[in-house]
Image 1 (cartoon, rainbow, N blue to C red):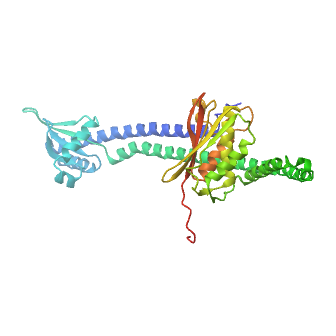
Image 2: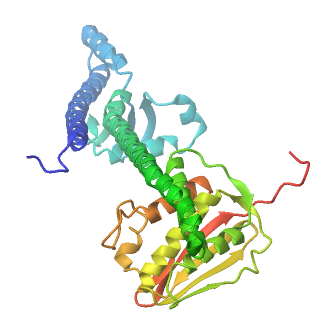
Amino acid sequence: MLPQWFNWRIILIGIAIILVSGTIFYSQYVSGKIAREERKNVEAWVEAQRTILNSSDSASINLATKISTENNQIPIIETNEKDSITGNYLNLDTVKVKAEKTYLSNKLADFKRYNHKPIILVLKESPYTANRYYYGESQLLKEVKLYPIVQLIIVALFITIAIVALQTSYRSAQNQLWASMAKETAHQLGTPVSSLQGWLEILKEQEANAAIVPEIAKDVNRLLLITDRFGKIGSEPQLEWRKPVEQIHFMLDYMKKRTGGQVNFIFDDSILKNITTLLSPPLFDWVLENLIKNALDAIEGNGTISITTSITAEEILIDVTDTGKGIAKNHINNVFKPGFTTKKRGWGLGLSLSKRIIEQYHKGKLFVKCSEQGKGTTFRIILPLQALPLAGSL
């Protein structure tokens, strides 16, 4: 059985790397071959110049002239025995030579960097007089050298696009999976919740149950709300103009009645009391519920959970803080990943779904603001501060 990582994606990337490596090595071989041929051509051109200067045979001169004129690709610069530029050159930009005083000297410096040994044409032995011919690379050789780099960029771009497409496809498949699971969960919950509603109506008929029926009704309604939430996962929620303070109070009141007296809840609503923004009440409540439940798990039934708020010119900030055991540093980056949990029970989806609700549906942010083991954790919700439209405005 092949190891898990050995799949078709790894094979595809491996093949791409092999192809690019092979192309680079082959291009180097071809460019080396072309470079050797170009040196032979320059040597033949210099020999033709020697023949033109020294020969008296018209046939030889004609052949040498033909060889000289056939070199229209390889740039050449002539210097004297002291390596000073004589002003003679071949296959260079004439306009730039005339317009720029340093053009020839700059080109000569470039040619010397190619490590091409100059080809020397001795004119006189005494006093020693000679011409040196430095040459550069033809356009063909430059293109051959550039080809593997272009191909490498194209392959890298292809691999990047492929990886992004695979990640997008994976996320889409995961989203569809979670949505399908959520809808199936809602469907499965529907039957027992309907049955509980029926039993609740029977309990209401007996006066002895008057004290407990309202509380049971709240829990049944809660189940109905949870069923509705799961049923709506995967569809675009409808945002409404709501006060975050009211949603926080509602969730705190619900959670207080279902926790022991050793849990202290603190919430100062003065800052956000009159602030209204766009929310999906059921989904925003779900986020608050998940954060408070995580805080309750962290303090293990004994401690303080505080909710503090603040506003800026553009944002609403809501911090949920507990005095619990805190989160290990190596776990902080994983708490929002689907399936991650340090609890013995649960699927590890609460914080993952909460982050998606805040960031995807409410265009906000949810993150761990700070956490210290043994002292507690603070989760921060950031919501965009949106002005309620004036009556009669579009």
